[in-house]
Length: 335
Image (cartoon, rainbow, N blue to C red; front, side):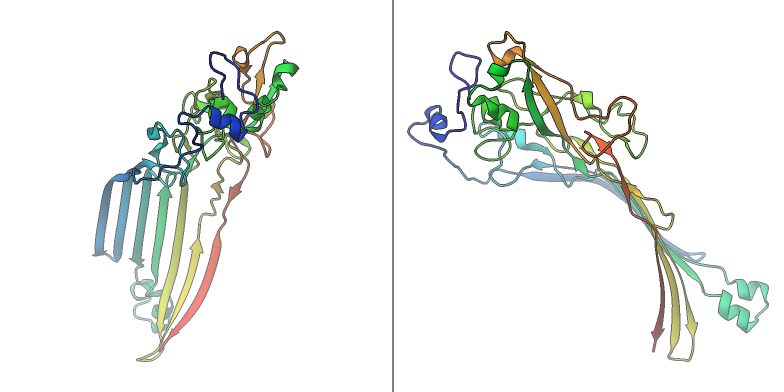
């Protein structure tokens, strides 16, 4: 909290008594008001293409371009009780684009065509079918958070009683009130995004940066960071599943089906999301500073050193992939 007419935080701002002395309505403490005011909406363009059995092919494809907006955050997790619009934005489960295609194809009867009715050749080579499902979709929404926030340059001001809350992610002191920021009581600080953090990131694959550190900074004193979700999207995904199968007739009432299926048939591992989206900063204060606003933040500090690849803990880095091909063989008897 901020002392009236000054540019310095109030000492011991996390103390409930100190907080209550600065509230609008005395002698009340925190006042909780519950009401149904949140809304959400989903809008999309959906297209479907269908091809019924023609030359042995059945095909179904669908594409969705969508946007999901609403009030985010958990119950009672209002960023600013006097401006609920700060909680309105893209939802965490939004997927802007999705494309799916499924198909089944009756392979040509090679035995009948080339072996002139040979029953053995026809029994082995005829009647095979291929089916598959292919999926493409946008990445999962992600957000940048505040990591370690340290102070340097003015030991006296950095260590002032009550001001150490600034360096533990407690937004009470930074925002001037315990009632702003994400969560109840002492809202967490949130960094400020200057532009899309994926812009000019220069991602080159595993162990490189998915985000641009210069897109992230510390908000001005008494100001909120960027709360809207998502702030960027993680890597998209694609998957190809394919099945080859055939039925062998044993008797009039019995048949044997042989099936081989490959999930992720091309063995294409999918990129993980960035392993750390918590940006770390240092607030530099001149030795002669008398107020916190006389300082300035460094750039994000937890980034790979020049010329080195990403490691666990570096901001905005993707350090691994997941997924691999899986094969399945099955025999089923129908009777």
